[in-house]
Length: 249
Image (cartoon, rainbow, N blue to C red):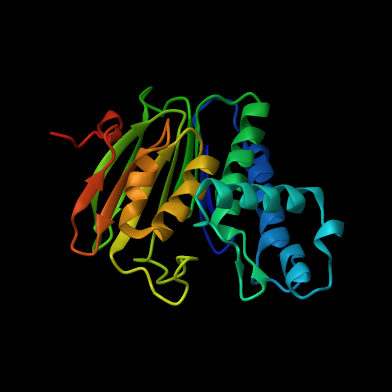
């Protein structure tokens, strides 16, 4: 069972390999993504985060999910030495964490319904569980940021999350909080494999903000692997990245 729908401004694909999956199962996942978008989108005036930014709602009066996400953002900022900052010009934007958090929660909806083998891809950030339809680990490609028709690396994962941060699709939407007026140009793509997509996504965002130092940061995290592509097309990987790399020689 598989479907792709446009939500949160991006294509969201859900694929369930197990027998017995039906449209109601997919709808539960997509309804959850719609809920997250309506609550956290900084582009919707009616969203809860917009109400906070427009001073119509105090953070202390915000919903439990909002309080959770803002707390996770604060913890991530501390864990990344200040490189994950959601407050810019007085407005909060937790998007760099919300997507991975939402994907992980959506995966939880499927596991709670008894599914063991599935794949969720929201805008290129991916959570897998179990095995694919061939009974193998899931295979995830890393795009060539200079030619998206090509894959530079193929990864194999079965429980992990894979997140990529970069500027080659959306331009300079990630910034270095320590140098907020300087665009990040020395790297174009940084992919992180983590224990789940929430962990991979939040650290991929912060690591990209670090520039070339980001790959070393990912390499310092137990249970994480990373692959960075710089502006000259040169790739740098963490020492454990070959554990996931199907294209290694």
